[in-house]
Length: 341
Ligand code: ASP
Image (cartoon, rainbow, N blue to C red; front, side):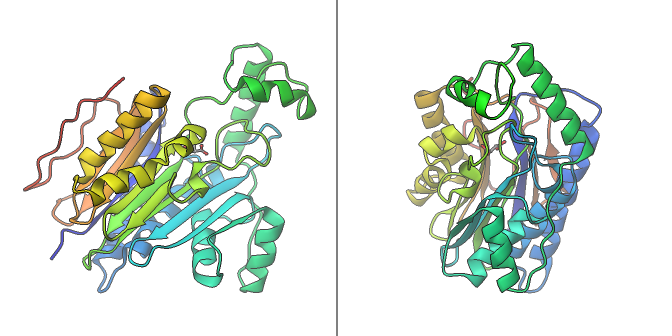
C-alpha cells in the first residue's frame, strides 16, 4: 500500500524570531495530525484530509487565513481559497469573500454544489450559501490583526515601506496615507495529501497580502497558480507573493515537472528556480506530493513553515526555522536541496 500522508504549510517569507514560534509549531503539527487522522480512517480521502488540516490552520488565528486573515488597505478581511481533487480534476475556488469562518470549506462547497469552479464576492457567496442551505457568518478581524493593521499604516505614514509603487499612486482614493506596501510575511496556509488509493489533493487558504487594494484576488484563488492536483502527476500548494506566483502558474508548473517524471522534490526546486530566474528571490515557497507519494518543498524565501506526516513516519515533523531541513524518508533520496537566494 502507498505510504499515504500529508504536508501542510503556514506561509513563506522572511523569518522573524518571536515568542509565537512554539505556537506556530504546535498549530502546524495539530493541522498535519488532523489531516493524517482523516487518511488513517477506512477509505480516508486526501480531499477530507486537506480540508480538515486547513480548517485547523484557519481557526488558529495564528496564520493568515480564516480568523487570522491579514487586512486590506481599508482594514477589512477578504479571503481567497481553493481546493482541487486530483482524482477527477474537480476544483472549487472563492475570491474576495468574508462570509465564512472556513474559506476552504466554502471552496469545497462550490466544487461540490455548483457547476462552476470559481465564485467571487461576499454578497454572491452569501446567496450561494443560502441556496445550498449553509449558514455563513461574516469574518471579523482578530484583535491581533487590527493591531498589526494600525502598525502597518503607521509605517506607511513614516515612509518606511516602498513596494507596490503603482498602487501607491491610487492610495489617496482609499486612504489618506502617504506610502504603501505589503509587508513580506503573509503566513498563508495550504496542504497537499495523497491517500492510500493514490488520490492526491491540494488546498490553499489566505487573507491575501497585507494592505492589498479592495477587490484584489491573489494566486490562492487561482487553480494552476496557488494549487494544482492531478492523479497523473501529483499535487502542489503555493505561498508567497501572489502576483508573482500567478505569472509563472507555479503549482501547474510543479505538476508538469512531476508529470514528466520528476519526483516531488526535484519538481518543486525546478519550478522555484524558474520563478527565481524570471522574477528574482524572496518571492515564494511550494509544497508537493507526487503520485508515488514522495514529497517535496522548496522556496526562494528565507523560510517556509511546514509540517509533514506520512504513514511511515513515527511522528509529525515540523520545520519553522530557516535552517531546519526536511526529513529523509525511507527509500527516498532527497534531490539537491541547495536553494538559490
Ligand atoms: N499567496 C498569497 C497571496 O498573494 C499570500 C501568501 O501566500 O502569503 O494572496
